[in-house]
Figure (cartoon, helix red, strand yellow):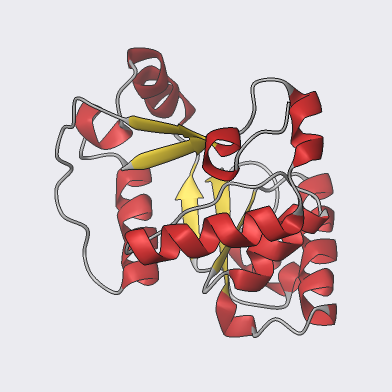
Length: 182
């Protein structure tokens, strides 16, 4: 696994143009079977480049009304961009059946099926975060773990393997990959 971090100084991000984003994604595609890009929730040129190039878009939302409205708006933008509906996987995170909209109401609001509902197990997830471990390593009987496995299966078409502990993480800097003009 490799992680490409953005520049430490946000002012340096002005050096990156959409063609850099395109080149980086193409490079990653040649090197890795899967590339996951966690973008900001806006439609700037970099995000649009990444979304246009994506084989699949994982749209993650939750249940508060503002989030539902923003998801509806986002889906409308995807329609205007002529994205194939099959390209978009919709995930509802932190679903709490006792609060907010239920599964049927959310699917009606989005006018499309939700691929995965991840339940709200805040204490379990935060315990794993605080321990610096994946949730699957802290408890395998969690409904969150089951939902994430379902998500992975829907993305790659197979059940995920048991996690293998790795003691290293390669870090790359975006500036180092495309060169810096200082």
